[in-house]
Image (cartoon, rainbow, N blue to C red; front, side, top):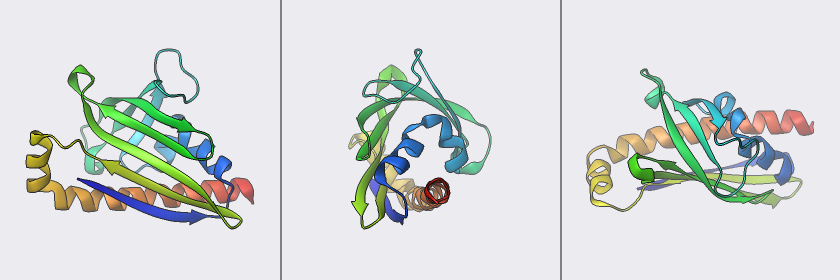
Length: 154
């Protein structure tokens, strides 16, 4: 009920982290989350800050909004958030880890679903298909981030 993709980028960890952690960039990087905005007057990432993302699941309508809460936020090292459901129940956790590697950065994007009964049933029925979709989406996201980061550093 989890997966990850790692990609090397020819840009400093701080540069890549700033692109990813500014959730207003999400629509330009993600194939499924087409827009995102800060909530509660926030204008920058910090632990506990909430934002919402507009999602086109599998790239198809209808679009819907999900509320997220940042759980880890360390410049140049990690950016992580939970997707929240009713009652602020965690539906999914997303994480980006950044590690200096030579002149650039190794970036790992990952997701993990909570280990509860409904999620286990969902994963047993649709997990293989959704896991492949998430892997393709993470790879596409990281390719777009790499392009922007390397252009910025170029």
